[in-house]
Amino acid sequence: MNGRIVVGVDGSAPATAAAEWAAADARRRGLALRIVHVCEQWPHGLAAFSAEYCAGALEAAADRARELAGAVEVTTELRAGSVIDDLIDESASADSLVLGSRGLGGFSGMVLGSVSTAVAGHAHGPVVIVRGGRREEHGRIVVGYDESEHSEAAMQYAIEQARACHARLHVLYAWQLPIFSPYAAGYNSLLEKAFQHEVRVAAERVVPWREKNPDVEITDEQLCEHPAGALIKAATTADLVVVGSRGLGGLTSAVLGSVSRAVLHHVTCPVAVVRPREERL
Image (tube, rainbow, N blue to C red; front, side):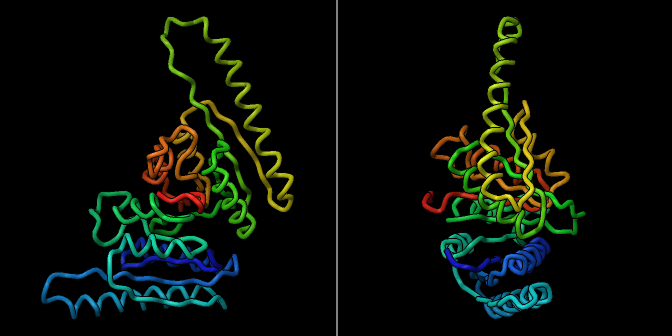
């Protein structure tokens, strides 16, 4: 990892929004910005047009990023190859990788494109997915935290973002009750005790983070509902939602857990998916 943010662009509106977000993030955090366009091979006879379009898309993204990045170093690279493979390679040496939610090749009705889904599931470090359009700023970042290795990495990234943005950090833990037969009324008191135990333990997990980061305002909340639904609701008043790529409930073979996948598909603000750097699937 080094001190630069990489953003992948392709001339689409979400990619432009990603370049704008990446430029602002680089400026806030004092990191260099690298803008990459991977130009895949077009059908025979369109090679010249393809090269011209790719170069133009990269230049337009760079011009917009430089307007927002201030004194930050902005570099560009036009690459030929596989978009997914090349962007995953870029993530290995980047602080974070930023992408639009859907590129030019996606169906207009899809929330998340195949490139952003694949890269978020396989990148070496944090991947931020940005949708187009301006949003109201809330001064709040939300992170899902269940003390799994992935959520530990997500928490660290969320704290860095909250510090750079001078934003509040809201730590969310949601616990879904086990499903029992409706006739098992005797379990009610046991479930209530179990939930209270989960609440107490989850709140205690946040204390060391608050002590280690006194300059960041950290609040926490424990809810009895599905984690994906809780995060999606919390995102309506957030500038960024941060999740680990998998939580405690995820299968070890899954590249994206059900919670992170649901958040990516339903949250409209930028979403950061974070995997521990030593793990790569």
